[in-house]
Image (cartoon, rainbow, N blue to C red):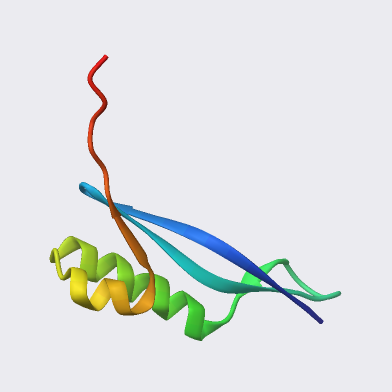
Length: 71
């Protein structure tokens, strides 16, 4: 089994979070996949962004606010 670091983006409303996760590659089954811990971390960040709880989301990821660009 090999482990690779990867950055997942979680988008909710006007916020985006960069979440560092580990992708697991193995010879068996569907790969790559996330560990349960990383899947829960993604869910926790998503829920925190939905509640606009930036303090909690910032503990687990880098959080950005999206702003529209005037053309």
